[in-house]
Length: 330
Image (cartoon, rainbow, N blue to C red):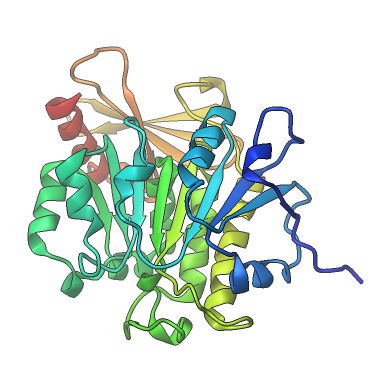
């Protein structure tokens, strides 16, 4: 019988350097790992690739750790119980950001991010309309940011993968999970993401070869050993690292020979929409004209549904969205 042994090894922050043995990712707990770490060590491994973990018990070492991890080009996962002061502290100027949260209540990180330093790419997944300020939605639309509310996500879960594929920095507020799946939460909601759905989103995050950092926050620091909250956080980490273990480095702009080009004629004027499907993973991208740099198109992550829509004679909304965005801001 196989023994449960997730490939975790403790590492002191001062030992984080280029000479250390290779690893798949760095896992950082702000404070003690506690029940979440215990639950993670009880899971069967999905890969034998080493994962180092650190416990920033005094909560003073995180900036230095993040700086070192960035220089070493290592994927990093930060587990931060309770709220975080702001997303901007984790973001370099060129960050491409994803957020999974329930709305603009407790806290409103979206407004803070847009007011300080609007990222070039931002996507928001899993929010609930009745918990979201309409003014924030208008601002996101004005900046051509993509959103996927809970109801739309639940209709087709795979619609979130192309959005997360584009991001480098991921933020997940565990308060977006419904109370029935995380009953230890002091301020739970009757509606929200299911446990399986939040884990699926974690895997999608790990699958992106752009991945640099994930910050998981909002869960209680005093969750009990063996509690559902501890187990779900551990399983979220498991799915995220499983995505990292099987991710494929691919992009149409970097290796065009690995993609199958599919051109779709639109209308009588012969306008052509170009889609590219990876021969490695089967994932899809669409080519969007760059109005400011002719001959240097954008390649946007999409799904097979967008290609099917184009084959039916309809221009995908995603294509129109990014065409307008490039025309206004590139």
